[in-house]
Image (tube, rainbow over all chains, first blue to last red; front, side):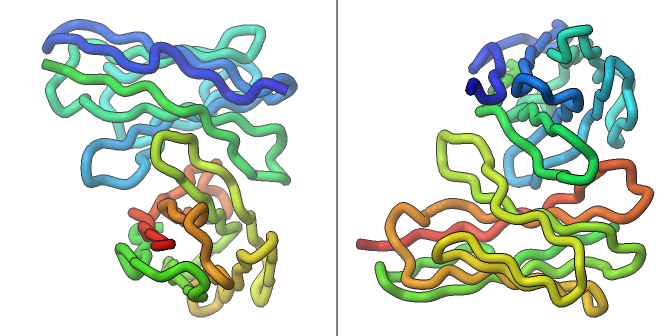
Length: 113
Length: 113
């Protein structure tokens, strides 16, 4: 069974541009989570989607947004990129609230020049 | 939850040594604690999800205990092997926190052969 897949693996953008990152959850998982790991910091919660709806978001500005598609895959969009957006972006999926266990992808490394 | 602390920050041990790490977190309104293992260039992998005070979980040579009243969890590795080299992350979340895990910075373990 395929795990969580993310694309692209690496992305280089310049300040002010937009970046789109994609995530496909494990088959049957309805919840998708996005995390940011900037250099020297822990994983920071960005967004949680479940059944196509945004359920919760972390303390990030509105230029961080996303969506979840009917097949439960998800996109993370970052508008008006800033240098400090350079980070590893991890996507995770889960099956159910009771389990809680997250299954992570290998991440997308975004570099903003 | 405002502050999750993991100690030590890094650890170097010899193959065969047993070791343990600590995760400290505010105990109020506790719901669950997650432990993950993150090897370089791979995705974080769930080790344990713990919910009950006094709970103890085991997976092979790795075990964990949980004290929700005083707000700490210990992760133990018995007879460390080079393949145990990774960063070990803990993430508690509170009831009602709507799946927003708060991640520690991790303990980086290096096991020398």
